[in-house]
Length: 628
Image (cartoon, rainbow, N blue to C red; front, side):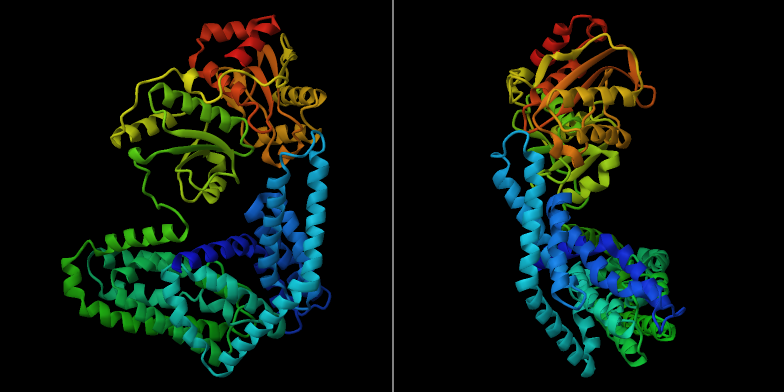
């Protein structure tokens, strides 16, 4: 049950958190320009309603679809969300959290079912019409069926919360919220319930107490203050710094180890949370938008006009009560704590493990060598740089006898959930980590010239793994050296070209791919965009320009073009490429070329490469790339 709640919370958070900036913008506009705001303005306040009804739900719906199936899923999710917005008169945040992911799921299932049956050259047509038709159908269903149901649920929740507020029981919510924070289950409650209800309440009264139930830093501040004054050892020494980070930085996780070290302190944060909500209730406090992160500064920035005294009082009251209760427990166990100096370190390790579990991660623990079975190279499009890096690593591992380790390449967004180690470019680190939180990550500046193999090899030897009898890399390459007909045409091997700029060389390769029927015209711009983001120079005088993931749908069929510049083309950091290999990959047809490229970059001598850079016979290069 806890694991399911954690996954649900992570999913809700993934839809809401990327859009917090939009919520804050809406909150500022509301606080400033509505009739009861700081600077009432009828013209500017006209933005408040459309932003809450249309902008925010559409952003959530798009993000929900994108989480499921990247940009394409986001588009269909936004279309579906528009239907549920039209169906009701209230802000449809909860509806967006349903229709957005549903749109992503539907278009993903369609693509999986249809990908092998689309005639060549019709991919763009099918992609565009399928997204439009499926999105339109979902929008209609939302208007007719889903919208009224969600509106009823929302009204019911609102009524239930209203009854709780009327009965004066809202403070008791902290009995669930405060332990949930320390167990990393707060996202399911905060983003799934409090944010939608808070937005609706702001529409009605201009502020909401719901935005401060979880974000109030008072309970944690009380615990850290008690440790600062009455703690012992490392806990006492580290508490003041943690207090500043927690209170002003809003990083609540920093106080969790102090509670885990002494579990009875959960009573202190519950008492503080209850006191804070009670104070907000009787003094009519609240925020105009979510406070993210939950720092005192963010709370002040989001405080509604006229609510500063009540909000400050809520933080101080929560701090005071939490401090009072914490002090009792900390003083009572001071002697035992002095004898157990490892308590904080153990609690911090426990907290990291719990946080990792809440995110589906293995924390900071590395994969042991004996357990390494699946390594992934990931790049934006998953067909050029990552394929080359994977081929090079696979070749080295197999050459040394580690034939039971699978090494594959994937686009970020499609990394398998059972990947144990993910290698990606340092500029893609954040995206790769988000796509595969369960894996250990290795970040490189260059997909081929790096020490990844040394890292893996050391891990394997340290894990007691014994290599089997080494085999020839060619025998275990997984695909042989037979190239599918038409992937590289002899007429697409150009030699003796005059030196040009990097952009001109990439443009020429893209034009040749287009003229040969491998790609649509937009793919060329995607090649240039990919180069602007991350260089495709791979070393040894070779570059492999290819399109970014956003234009992958414009690949009609797999094709390669090879362009030789004897005097070179300057790429990044003074690197000079003599061979420009333009790649358009669909499926795995181009992987033999990639494997041969890996062989070229690792095994060819400088003398052999120099001959390849100067030859005037296209057949030499054709054989080199197709036969290895």
